Image 1 (cartoon, rainbow, N blue to C red):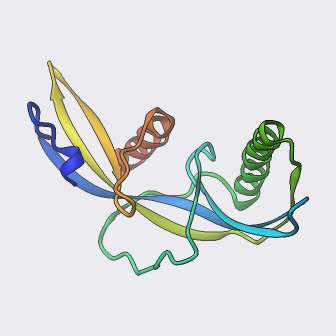
Image 2: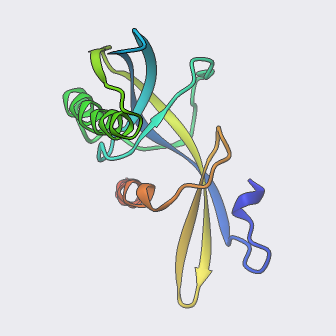
Length: 156
């Protein structure tokens, strides 16, 4: 969480927020034979995709700030097919190889933790988010997802 603390501007507050994700196991086919990958897509907008390791340990979440799913499992599966398909195409063009998604598992629902630091910036606030599992700062791609989550949490 030290990545949330700026040297000159420490956060005014921090909180742990759980965002809804759908996870899928994908079976790929290509020149190198079958390969399996596990990916997750956010359950709010279906716009951010990331890889999960097989050794990710799942635990129960109790009394936490959690968001509701806003897209269906079908929408999430379509988002994964589209986004991961584009990634495979880009990779294939760069490396002159071809892989495709052969099969996709039914969706599993998980709540994924992020530390959020709120910073005073002039007369308003801004935020920085940190993946609570990997410790990675979240970039611009995740900003829309967090803004949707904050709107949802505000109305509760």
